[in-house]
Structure formats: structure tokens, C-alpha cells
Length: 251
Image 1 (cartoon, helix red, strand yellow):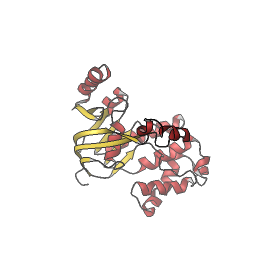
Image 2 (image 1 turned 45 degrees about the vertical axis):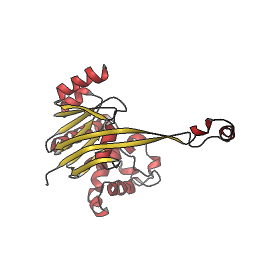
Image 3 (image 1 turned 90 degrees about the horizontal axis):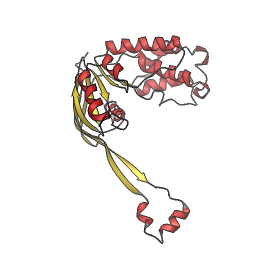
């Protein structure tokens, strides 16, 4: 296994907000006789991430904490390759498995079986590779009798079990986790929890986002504090959680 690593240097990502891009007919006519025209198609840009410099190496389980809108999930998606940076650089060495918004890539008109191959392709696996995993995925998800039905007939719990089974079957080198939970009965949740623990313990790098401070301290050996898209602090979990509570939450 090659030496795994994640490096961000002065990483910045901007988003755009379009104000009233499709005004009503009444608004369009009114704007011709008023000064309101400039309100249409106005664009506001803001930095979701600003000048983030961060290096993560083998053996580190990095927790990312921050208020809603701090940029936690955005940072995970940058590392996973979902969002390209506007400024700065990102270097990732190692196979990344992102457990982010499970099931987002599902096609509801396709069968559960076909969605296994679709999701596998999104994770970078060939049909031949996924064929070797297919039955294990179906067995773990416990959806044998439904696997050839279109996904639109699945319950939300069944879809979540399938998505979780696909995403966690392959051993990653870099595991990215965003507030993941497993849908299903107590038996399945127990299986899912055991699999997650095994993945976390056996993966060289884990990057983890959660609002549950105790879980972050339990899993992680390093914590990064984000606030309004900026990296505010970085250190051991106990100290960083206290910093977050005192300076971000209370502040």
C-alpha cells in the first residue's frame, strides 16, 4: 500500500447565489418603470472555504467540528473530488471512499441490482470488479427478494441499507464519513455499527464530521475546528472540543 496522505494548501471554494433569476411577468413589467431592474440577476459570491491549509497523514483520525454552515461537509466533498477548488491546491494519495449523502447517486427507475453497478462505477470500480462484490452487498443489505425491483418501490430503509452496503464493502485507504447512520431494525443497525468500527480501525486515514462531541472524541485522535469557512484551530480532541464550545458555540 502506497503512503497515503491528504494535503490542502490555501484551498478556497466560492459559491454563487443568484437573486431572483426568473422574475414573474408582473415584476419584469414593473422593473421597466422603476429602479428595481438591477435587483434581477444579481449575483452574490461567498467563500464556503477560505485559505484552508491542512495535511493529514497515515494513522490520523481527523474530526471536523463547527456550526451549521461552517464548511464541514463542503470540505469533505472537496477532498472526495465532488467540488473543484477555485484557489489553492489539493493532493490526495490513496483510494478514497466517501460516506457522504448515501444513495445520492441512485437511479430510482433502475433495479437495486443495476444500482449496485451504477454506484460501483461512481466509486471507480469496473463491472467485473463489482460482480465479485454483488452477492455480498445483497446479503448484507438483506434485500434478496427485492433486488430486481426498481428502486422507486424500495422503502427508505431498504434504500439506505443498500447504499450503506455498497459504500462500506470496499476497504478504503482514506475513509470520509459525514454524520452517517444506518436505516433498519436493531439487527441491521448492529451489523452496520460493527462494519463501521472495523472500517475505521483498519483504514489508514479517517476524516469524520459529526455534531456529537463524545463520538468525535471516541473515534478521532485529532480535531479541526471550522468557522465560516475558515480553519480556526487544530489539535488534540479534548482541547479542540473545549475550544469549540468556548469560542465558537458560546461566542
